[in-house]
Image 1 (tube, rainbow, N blue to C red):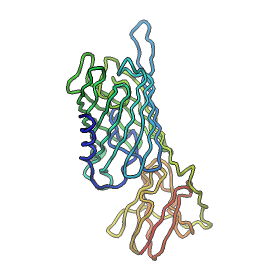
Image 2 (image 1 turned 180 degrees about the horizontal axis):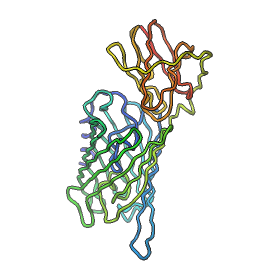
Image 3 (image 1 turned 90 degrees about the horizontal axis):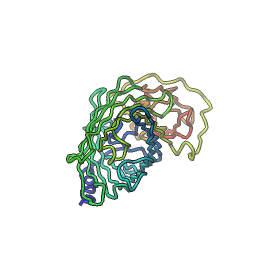
Image 4 (image 1 turned 90 degrees about the vertical axis):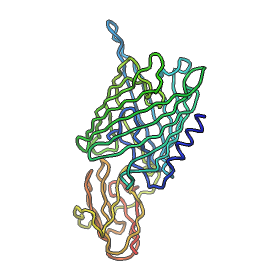
Length: 352
């Protein structure tokens, strides 16, 4: 029954869409994923470490490391595994494994009314299937998140649990955010409390990494543990490490022989289209336009990039985090381009 329900959740979100935004702790909360999947060819390694302190006089510090390893795949999917080294979910499984797949059909940044994803996974400690339907919507600096979870009930009796979760992430600046969330089983058992978390999130300047400092009463970030509050308050951090595989396996392109003048900042108009530079990728990497169209590239990450023609015919100059640069293409033709500081980043403009 739980497996069938999880598949229905995935099917219910089967709508057309383009590539979803990549992960960052600035857009989510400590216990909610926020409907993200990674772009194809990007590996995500997250290190989540939470600490609890026993009462006086011992005041012993106990740590609970959790590791996430996931891979962004085509068709807007993410496959991954959570490994918690000190789980409290089941005494038979002190180490908790969650294997999962996630599909994100909707992305607000690309024109959808909201972000949406569905996840199905298997938790070895609970010995059953778990599922989550997640939505999020941004209004200015505020991003609201909500999730419905169907969980296998740990223990020999089996059965299933339902959990509801909600949260908010508030961008104070481009690189600083505050976040908080709550979650609860609809039928909590003995010792189970409402789960909560509050955090401060930071972007590491000039890198693709982000850091969350937070407090929570949950053990780790699996769907099971993130839905079950405990009596203990834990303090910890999460560090995200996206790895773009083309940076190591793609062919390096030479920098142009000439150095054209940088383009000026630009805004989108009716004769322009927009594109994004993020996660060491051009999104989209191939653009087909009519002659006379201006392409406005926005740097959606934290690292400086350029849009530089292979033949040296145009160069955006350095595009800082959050900046926009526009280049107008007047003549028909095919124009390969790359990022000068990161030659493995490649794209192509086709002008009709």
